[in-house]
Image 1 (tube, rainbow, N blue to C red):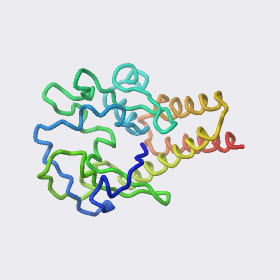
Image 2: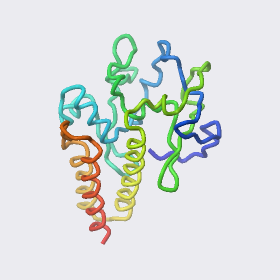
Image 3: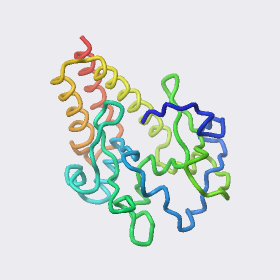
Image 4: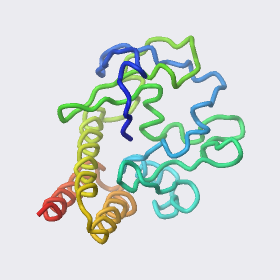
Amino acid sequence: MRREVALEEISDGRLYELNDMVKADCHDCEGCHDCCQGMGESVILDPLDVHRLSVNLGESPEKLMEDRLELDVVDGNILPHLRMTGKEERCVFLNQEGRCSIHPFRPGVCRLFPLGRYYENGSFKYFLQVHECKKQNRSKIKVRKWVDTPDLKKYEQFISDWHYFLKDVQEVLYQSSDTELIKNLNLYVVNRFYLKPYTTEEDFFPQFYTRLKEGRELLSLAEE
């Protein structure tokens, strides 16, 4: 999700890499779950997030879309996000004790918080959001430990490639007046990258990049 604000307004002014120490450790949140409610449509999911949820919950992506995930327009793209429910708009995966029921396979945005990603020059770095978490006694922790994701280098490359692919899709969507093209391109992204299951018998990343190659070829045709 694009944020039309200066980085200095929302961060400590620094950009971090994997081996840097950052003041992000909330000590297991100590009973706080403020970032798990009232988040609206902001917990956007990437294809790996949906794949992890599908595999670990034993349900198809289509089934998850029925009651736990929602589709909405994000910067021109139609993308899934975690559903918020009830008067307090709690995350659908937050249990009665205020704890995350999917913590071992939680989405990337949740793993990152209160960090964010700053994209530039075909890649990204991390920044610390200073207004998003009310905890004041956070400790320093190495970024790679905080993100807590297997195959971290592959994961970072995937995050970057997915971001810039969506950005290219957005450019086509914004420049086109062909409503049928816009509809079909959005449906393609949702169906091909999210709803079509990835086999668990193979690593996720090669499967994703096969689809990404197809997606870029389709974009090239759309731009002609």
